[in-house]
Image 1 (spheres, helix red, strand yellow):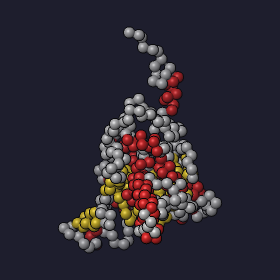
Image 2 (spheres, rainbow, N blue to C red; image 1 turned 90 degrees about the vertical axis):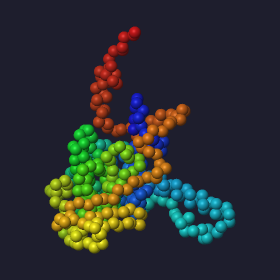
Image 3 (cartoon, rainbow, N blue to C red; image 1 turned 135 degrees about the vertical axis):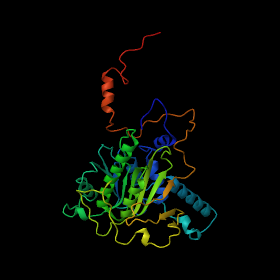
Image 4 (cartoon, rainbow, N blue to C red; image 1 turned 120 degrees about the horizontal axis):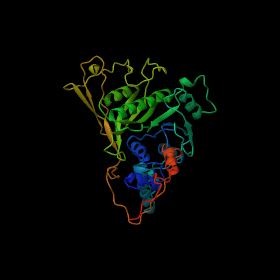
Length: 377
């Protein structure tokens, strides 16, 4: 989040600086939480590909410090104002509706948060950082040891599932070759999934970044084998012009008889597990014209298609837009006040990949490699 000579930053970039976030991606996690109540009952979290730490910063401020943001903060403010107005009018506290007396978020007990990334990350309150590769199986025992340093036992670490939530905002350095970028991103997602399958407890949640493209429903189908609910979420702070989206998986449930093999990790081209509960769409009832619509309590419609194949390998995940419509549009341009002040980065990069290039340019005589002044006209 440094300064730029060509000011092309959007509203969320500026808002992140004003509110003290390390990156604008913090609003993506906040808006996903608004839609799915992601942090309900969550005390143990693993943040993968965490650097520079904006998602870990959200976890720290919500779970550890008990702060509220977004729609939840607005609703709590409305409840406080109604409570004050009721007390001023002489209404007895017990007569106020229970919804008006909901307790706001407070610091939770027993919170454990581990952030993992190949790049170094500046420390955060209550966050344990690990510099490791999520594709390496040896990273898993390091995470489990960081969660429970006093009770960790290496002999039984493979069977433990102590984590409520695993999140990953990792993405590759895009090359501009869309097919290659989509493939690498899918492999990064599967690396996060393979780690999550070994640390999540039953009923846990998993959130990861994806690039929507052709055959993305194959990935949805594989995720659906391990989670009861799978959504494709697009936060309002994520640019509409970007292929970026997030899979939000809830209700972790390992298929019966499925065995995790570290030597054959789950990924593109791998045989997906099959459930024994007879979940083939051909065996289900309620289909009309070879399709079935199910409307959930939150208004989301799930559409299922009956298949003629013996193995159903396609599944359409419901698409959900996160964030209030009154929020900023990440693709729009907003006028800035005349007296605005350019803010410094909340947390400068600790080890930027362009650091060596800047050093070489300075050795050549300047930031942009200019060694002599232009002749006067």
